[in-house]
Image (cartoon, rainbow, N blue to C red; front, side, top):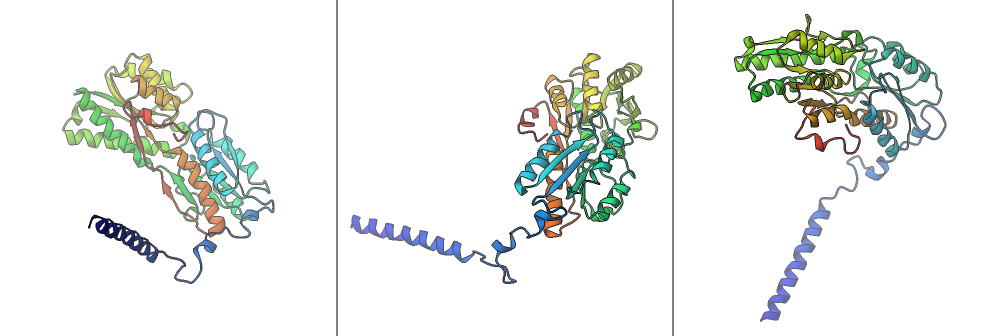
Length: 361
């Protein structure tokens, strides 16, 4: 009887496994409804590697407006990873300046656009209206363009150009966090300042300041404490004018002139490291709600030390990876203008240990 039960059980198991395999195979899709095989359809087009120059491989140039402060390092890593995946050569270019330098970027772009081996161009566009001639020349030469990081809504042929980047409205996340920080630290009054420098000509940064300012005001109003605080983002809500060539001393002077600063927000990779240095210099470590942008080494150290309460990462690795893939898709598949929002990643002292491990921030 026992042997019979074992035999039945073994038979049942075999039947179950067999039935599962049959069920799994019955759901397999072997070919498209149109009759072609997916394996054939997944192959690269015959002429892709010789798209613009007959050298047997794609060459993409990525040009940024500041390669001198480390923010774009993960962007270059992401572009390199994508290039390796598709067998493309990636030229990593950008202004050597540690602060925004659109003029130098445009100079580099004007050189690259004449290179006959270039199959595609990826560029940042921080200075609105400055890149139209680049796009026109590229299109005339048959070179596709993708933009990344900073967004120029009015750029020539915008609707046909893909963009990868973080919408400036994401700064509201830091604004909301700052308001919560004030409550958590028990601050009931004081000044909140947003230092910046419009001389940079970066519309994206200006929009971040406005988004953060509006979120702070709305949050304090909802809490019924707006009248107790002075939120200062300058006369046009695009930043309290602070010299980008001496931002640390500029922010320290701002703290000293107000005398009651309890919160601050810095809108980019220039002013955020300056903010955390100013906090340390003013002896305000862990005594202020200080938020900023990007997650480079200075920001990460500032979060660990308490000189920075939180920072918004815009996931720059993706800002390098996806534009390369987008250009490839445009060349090989005819897929254009597939925009990607890289969103915002709020990082604090508690979570900073989880970022930057593989050059993604």
